[in-house]
Image (cartoon, rainbow, N blue to C red; front, top):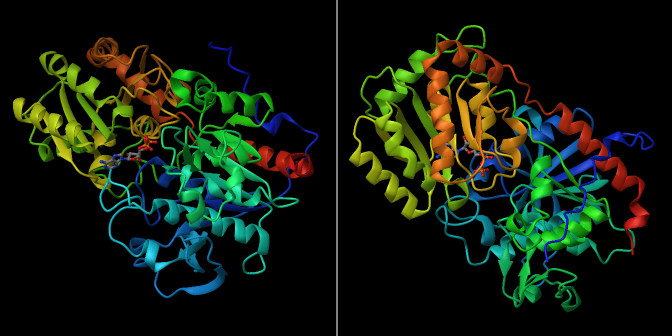
Length: 498
Ligand code: ADP
């Protein structure tokens, strides 16, 4: 039976009785856009620790993939991680990200010295030993929490998504464990492995049960994080409510309701960093700002030309996305013909599932001059698309926070998005973009109709663009809220020890 969702605890910020002291925070992540990015987590892992450093001593722990080490120059070893189960001994080296962000790299050539993106040889195909590759990330974080590195012992671990989830399990047997905060960036990726991984990861058999890290007969890294962490956060208030319901909970909704009832779950909205500024972005053909958008035209023409589109006075729609079911690109494909019939053009940059890639290529072949698709990952082109398009299509079936719609607004492209998760929390319907209620082509078409109407009445478009570009998307509010959570788990540390 569907029970009423538990109330999500408001973040601890309002709790003035807890002093917001500076903490030593180890931010554990599988990607950081300074060196390696597969999606939004890479951007957040670059921006959030930097923002946190205004209040805390935040440092990052990241696997030393080949692509990362090749960008780092000579490294100084700062510590060792002992072997455990089938995980070999590893070293920890000191590195620096942009503007001196301290980063500890986990050095283990047998697991990380491989070509390609973080999770597999190519996007969408995972390495078979990802249990060990990311088990080691959690194990190393736990070792640093226990033993310190560089004489620095973190007050807490800030974990991100399933690849770091085991850290909380490793610490769970300590008498007074270092507190762990786990941020859920996307509940749909769960890090599922066979039972046999338990021994490869050196975890006790007793942990393999539903009240632990077992998920329907398999070992789940994500569940380990959700179950054993001191506190859970996710990246928007609406997603925090949604994941407690079966339709968005990916099978974890019961556990999440329980954690919320314990007041250990909060939604904290992501921000975007200052590199997303159309007045100074070196990727753009011409700069512009909220008071003078003339420079958008040059970006628009470059985008049209690079996708082989005809000249047009109609609106330009963009999609910049991982091509996976979540993102609803199939819904946009279904609505594409009607957009073109109405006088619009569409450009798409993305990569992911083969079937969606093929459908996009086919669509572009069918509508030359009106629809262009670029299958691949291209940062420069994506920034020009935000800067040159009039609207961004985002019919995501679910969206924990979403960064693309914030980038689009900052660059003056109005998002047309499904009213779900972080999209609801970051787009003001009819003011900075258009929200529609059902993730279906008919829903998207409603949003598109409203967008065409705004485009044709130049004044409305201008007002909305200004409102979108001047909206605040900074990290300050998030840092205050995370500081509240850090204070709460530190103050109640002994309470969490069972
Ligand atoms: P998610 O993390 O689910 O992929 P987000 O909206 O949070 O979604 O973040 C996506 C990020 O990845 C944005 O910075 C977006 O611009 C970028 N991105 C996605 N696909 C591409 C691509 N093919 N080329 C360039 N950037 C892309």
